[in-house]
Image (cartoon, rainbow, N blue to C red; front, side, top):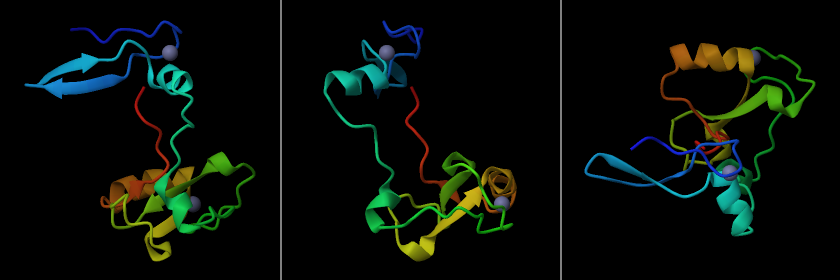
Length: 114
Ligand SMILES: [Zn+2]
Ligand SMILES: [Zn+2]
């Protein structure tokens, strides 16, 4: 089954469930589904711990102009571990470096796949 496109024409339909290796899709994309259910966009877990994303990179000290230039990483790769000691603010340049070197690090503010 080919992944259908949502009625909004912007995104692919969200995955509903996978059974016996076969994917089943919802009738709309995640964005439309959330809008319809009046759900707020997903909030990254680390925000609950009170962690504040820094404006400078923890690795190279790059001062960001926009919040989007910095990504919050979980050092141990466990997105549920939102202890402050497990969180780092990393600039997009260092994201690439981290991906190659520190394989356990995971981005904490990735959005769902649409
Ligand atoms: Zn849609
Ligand atoms: Zn950096």
